[in-house]
Length: 212
Image (tube, rainbow, N blue to C red; front, side, top):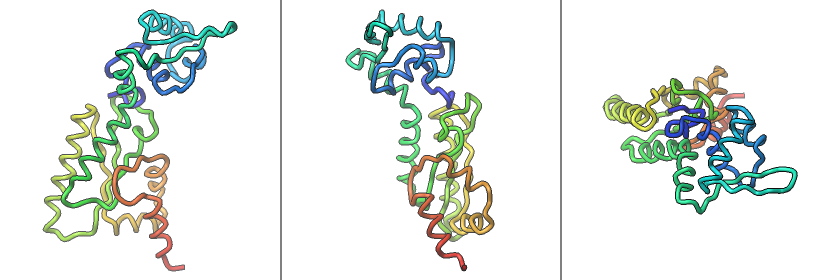
């Protein structure tokens, strides 16, 4: 899946980014505004797409005299499908959170960072996951590894993209904070929490526990 424009998985033409913008907009937008937000094609190309979509009734056009404003016709039969495609990124994170919430060994924290969190990337981008596991006995290692393995396969099944999992124990996470490891910035800016304790809370608690 193209992590920058998930809707392009199903609508690979310029129509995909245009519909993505319209589905996420509350108010009418001009052709130039839609072109800027879509980040692809030309202004003329975007306007052709809008004209074609308007002819199907999927897009409404408001003539304000000096400009035309376009908006998704949310009553159209196809509109719910467009909105679902436009929200594939949030659907992905919700599905991953649901799976992790069913784990027998719940993680201290899980989140998505990297391309998915930034909303960029491409067909070859990894889905980057941060997993902080509880400090545990070796007898639990096999079960934990099985959970993580199934999660990585779920990512591939849902997106076609490989999963990159940065996994560490609560103690190992503390060590990263003590050494002020730069990777902490990658995990936080930005990130989408899936389950567990928020990363900022963990960082604040660990920072407060450090000797001064």
